[in-house]
Length: 190
Image (cartoon, rainbow, N blue to C red):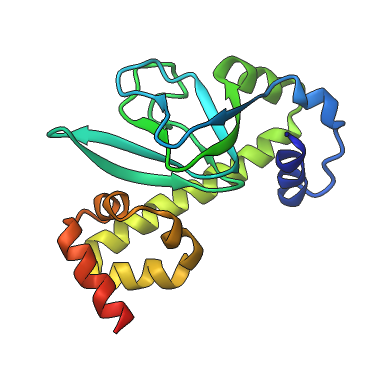
C-alpha cells in the first residue's frame, strides 16, 4: 500500500529515486473503521499518519464535546504536531471520519528514515510548510471573515471534501451550532 505514498513523494521531490522497498520498511499499513480512535488526548504521541484512502480528523474535547481542528484526506499527513516532535502526551485526538486505509510511521522510524535518506527531509519540509501555511490561513480567516463567508469559501474551495464531512463534525470545525450550519446550507442551496 505504500505505492501511493511513494508516488506522492516523487510528485513533491523531483529526482526522488530511492527504491520503494528500502523505505517501505519504515512504514506500517492499517485499515481503520469509521470513528476508530488512533490517538487520544494525554496518550504519548509517537506516530504520524498518511491517508491512502478515507479521511482522518484531529480534535480536542471541551465540555465533553469534540472541537474539530483539522482534516486529513487522501495524500495528507496528520499527527499531533504539538507533541509528536518530543513524545509528550497528546493535546489532541485523532479519529477516522470514515473507513480509511492509512500508513503509519513511528517517531523513531521517522527520525531513522530522515537520517538514512536525507532527501526525504525535503519532502517532509514541503508537507509541513503547506500544513503550517494552511493553519495560519485558517486562523486569519476565522479572525477576519464572518462564519457564513467562511462556509461559502470552504464549500467553493473544497466541494468534494464538504460532501464527505458529517454536519456535526463540520459545525464543530467551524465553531457553530448544527442549527447555524443548516441555515448556511439552506442559504447556499437557495
